[in-house]
Image 1 (cartoon, protein in one colour):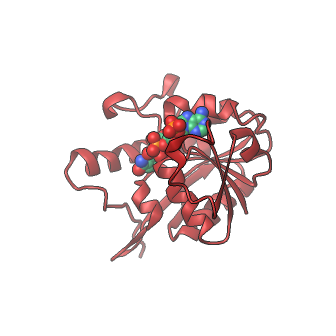
Image 2: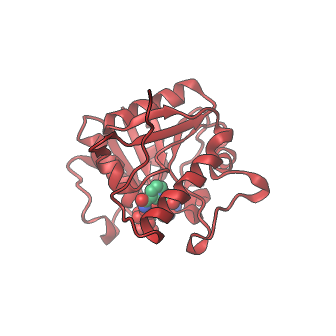
Image 3: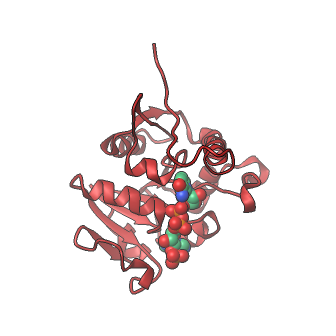
Length: 207
Ligand SMILES: NC(=O)c1ccc[n+]([C@@H]2O[C@H](COP(=O)([O-])OP(=O)(O)OC[C@H]3O[C@@H](n4cnc5c(N)ncnc54)[C@H](OP(=O)(O)O)[C@@H]3O)[C@@H](O)[C@H]2O)c1
């Protein structure tokens, strides 16, 4: 699959390296391809381009910028109508004080408004980037919730989560994105404020 990753930071690199290592064609969409921050990107395995170039030919576009940059990053992709957009962002307020949900709209729903006509799936936002690099735990794979309104796009999200080793779980429509963003806050609090550290993950047990 041709995957564009908009935002080559912690999350983007964990996902991109994982998929590139499993045979997918990964291109990072970046603001400045010559930025020294990108010196550590493995360009033998992943391409680097502008957001628009990366998005143009991609089968799936992952959004992994800071929330404050998300709207601008989406605009720089050009039209995303009909495209599968996997939204990994969390609309965090400063100092992790909560979530930016104006009028009750989740980040995932805001992304869908900004990426007009795109098939948006909320996914890869509920756990740390370290778990995206390796979701294996002694009790089994970490879970990855995905929610969206287009069955085909959700299938892409599921396949890409499973490719990384996650237990991918269908979490219904995009209207549920806010629940996943609150779950992300729970993980962040436990890991960073509650003293448990980043090597923790949520799993779904079944019987
Ligand atoms: N960190 C986690 O464990 C984690 C887990 C789940 C979800 N998330 C969410 O995922 C998102 C990314 O987190 P992160 O930790 O990966 O952040 P990060 O390390 O700060 O990386 C963000 C990347 O986005 C790039 N960027 C900013 N504006 C851009 C634009 N207009 N076009 C293209 N790229 C742009 C930045 O580039 P520059 O260096 O040029 O600014 C940077 O490479 C956030 O919304 C976060 O809440 C994070």
